[in-house]
Image: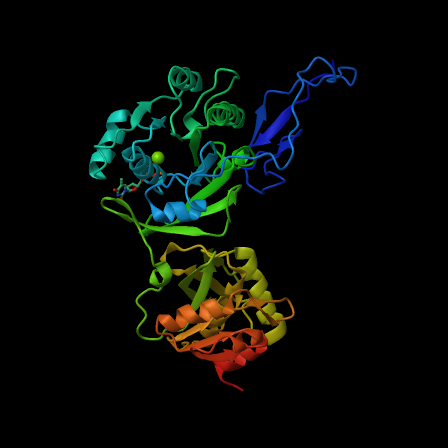
Length: 455
Ligand code: TYD
Ligand code: MG
């Protein structure tokens, strides 16, 4: 037998290396590599052919039972899932601690239990009394779900095997679970993986829908949900700023539906309320025009959401390295836009600090935001406010051209509906924008002319 090699596993992304490093080469996180028990490596002579069981092949046309989805009682949750929970599927619900994962799942679990389905909610983080107190606060105490506080996967599965399988099993959180099949403390990559593996196997064999809660922490002290992404059918991320009221539920992977739909909630005194029409949410009270603020008609799946983008530029007197800080957008994308504005439009940001913020704790992932960000930056740099009733969208290339984006007409229609009177975007969108005045922008240089008014 070959000598087992040392392995180091990243707690954030699960990548494996044979040498310890301060930074993970795959995901770039610092101090997330931890040594894991080496895998036994067998020699090539140890053949696996022979001695196994025969597997059965089926044709693609084998009739299957049609998918009947279980609705969660929260239409925003169902929407993000692609129509509800598929029986026997494994769902991973990731998010930062305190964002509202337990609240959302308790609401969904109680609502499913109220339909008469058997629902089991296992908390490894809170005592049953705490969960019950939350249920009372949420007005859900009458729901007949089976609640337990446990962290041993063996105890949980032994108990569940003693009766008919439930419709839904919620495990909150996977990082508190412990499998005695392997060594290691709860929260380490190997424990998280082994516990999830056992729970998922039980769920698949018994047609139980399983929801695993996974905390995402930036410091890598516990293994993040990314190490489980390939093992589950659906990966959801619950996002938002804790200091803000709004929460976005996004699906990052879905074997049973589209991944670009979002669910929008607001955190209230009585739990999470659904926000059925979110398009106005992320516009802060905009009355007097201020420099550095623009409105972007974003599209999430099939859903338009208007978002305010705010830029602040502070010129530095000294030669200190200027800061660039971004909340709600990609910092690499901001660096690229600043470079294009410098190289193609002759603007200089090199001795200025640049701050960019997406209002309301929203995180933008739509590439069409480039033009709105550029408009906010130019407006801030020139100290000229943009008209409050205008929206901006388009992707910007390294050459400074404004490129076409998907669903221009949907974006413009929503903006018109909310009272905006002018859209600025890529040239091809002009045909579509009949409901409000449309001004095509072919390049960033044209955008600068339009805002600074030198043309
Ligand atoms: P929680 O669901 O415990 O978060 P997670 O499971 O993701 O760690 O939610 C935590 C926050 O939500 C907590 O700080 C208080 C707030 N909250 C409300 O504002 N209203 C409510 O009705 C509930 C239950 C929680
Ligand atoms: Mg929780």
